[in-house]
Length: 556
Image (cartoon, rainbow, N blue to C red; front, side, top):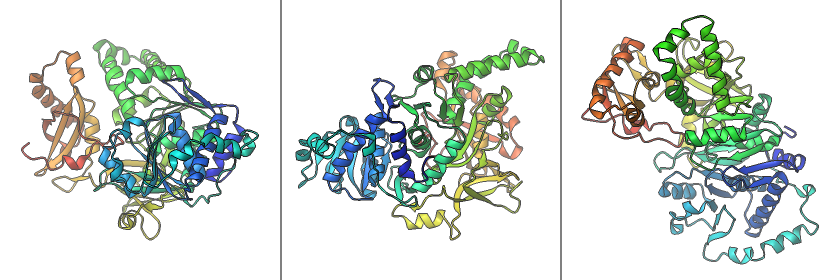
């Protein structure tokens, strides 16, 4: 980075990339150059100043990935306030709870979110603005926001009588160790924790991303992950804008059809995915093809199999636009069978492991250095410790310490003390081992680990990954009842319709799946029964199943 200060990175980027395209709405095609983004940020700074917004005041932001979302985010950061990004998919009560818990004084949102909120339940909010055009939707009693907006342009022209130039860009002086963002891990009162992230946390991630060629001046990036979460925020936005890249905001539900068209149009230089995308492509497109008898025969012949794998590899690369230098998979563990096939065809993806509390990276490995089965290599800005008598062979909880680790949980000292010990080690809650080169091998979550009948450690995620690849399984969850393992399965009804499979056949199919699965796992991991779950499992914003809702299901 041109500067080792988090805020100054953006100041330098706007000055040096002034004439380049910065942000485009993929759907509407509306485009903003770095110059235009800087001007809009300057407008918002005048608004904040007129409203007497103070350094470190909290400002909440709710909405889809759009250029206006990005402009608002950067305006808050570069003014010196603290941004509170909130996932728009949260229930309205959860959004209001986060706004209140975070002490936010202003709220920027999309109009459709505003329709469902009740301003009387957010007493500390002084003003609410639409991010489509920054009009004021609500002002608290005694505020004069609407009055100021009538002379908004006059105030801008008075401050910049000769027009706004790159020399006018001067952002707040803020130390890297200061709080810049609060990220809520969920919306509900009982489970909500506000992760406090500093400029240093983001800076460590951004500098590493640049060194590993995840961003660069003139790169084209498709933003499709929710920017309210730090994986998408870091990979698809912060480091890209800091480097002078061009970000295309998808601004639409990323269905397979929409994504394929967008990849073809944008031809991104770096891609950031959750495993689900690759797993669906493997299960729905690749696996049926390579499972055919004629294909299995062809793949058993040396030479021919190499050619077939090469063709599949090229087609998969073209699926993602054919122009990427990095395709990063993170946010959850990649299904092992999917990973094994991608490794076999030499598909150039990379693995990242992280968590919100590390903004987000903990480990990452380039394609050339990737160790199969690992979750990547520990970042150079972190130390690692595994709570095990033999951390190379026996899983234990993974602990990390360093520049990436959060400041703590907002207004929750008890949770902070439980997560970060007296020696500043962050307890990740993940079980794993390491090798001599600090490659991390994850087994599952500490809280989800089950004990077998003879005390064996059972990691349900590993069993679920295998079950997910069997016929007509859309989602699954392995739970333990009376020392027996039971799999809850939400069927793939779309695949059933396509294959003309009726619901009356499901029990027999799932029993065959159970028998097949038990051949693939250890005896103490055998599933005693598969139970059909009639609807999709409820999930967290990161699309992980909320296990706690299903662990004590009765009558199954």
